[in-house]
Length: 383
Image (cartoon, rainbow, N blue to C red; front, side):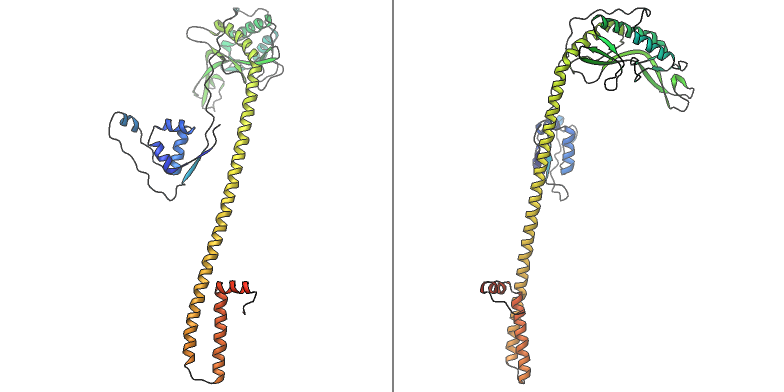
């Protein structure tokens, strides 16, 4: 995983106007949708649709300048994701056994019999899909009445083919949420067989199992799909269906061969999954450490700004008090000069002298230089 990076408005503007959005996304390690979101967040204009095609053919294009914005953030943090690894090539299976599906059920397997009996107890007058899925001891099967016999014959042929290879089929202890599985050695490969349906508008006639209150009904199509379920290796085919040129019965051998090969690949697949989970956990831990560090730095920056703001305020207060003290002293000098030329009684002169002394002491109390001087001499100024 790429470490988070910070980009400014100016840098992003130059980037999106220098190359197509996909190239920008590849360079930043994010998707082109994420590039658009960051541009909107920082209020950075992007080239209009068809800009690069017009420019490649020498046509006139309109370039939008980056205007200053007060509301938009100056920077944005980009969390680059892990590049998606290239998909592995599908494994080609050479040895494909032949699986014969009988025209009718002959000595069916026990699970096939129990599944048929379970489905026979389901109301089949609706014409909809009969389901035995998520029922213990029954095979995972969803099919209409018309495809029921065929579905059971396909499952019976698969179970017998696997039985010849000492591979048993179980439906007693569902792994995860799937209740049908082939047990190959120590590996359990879950599977399901279902018939595709087509959603149609319900006309209120309770067709295909829908009630008259349902808006839609699901019409069986007659197409069967066999699927291997669960977390399996990616480079194997996991789904087979009826096609235009072949039926599901014609490719049962591929299913058998694939189940065997997938079971052999499961230990390596689990180890790969464990390594991926360990890597993701380490990425989560690194992200958490990164954001903790970012939070610590933001806290330090906020404390530094608060301290700086307090120092500035103190300086401004000191300068304001010094200015007030200077103004008062200048005023008192003028008043003392004025009172010096006034003729009055001794009591009046004493009152004027007392008032001037009090006023000068007050001016000294405002003057920060007087307080510093008093601090250095150890003498306390009078109130």
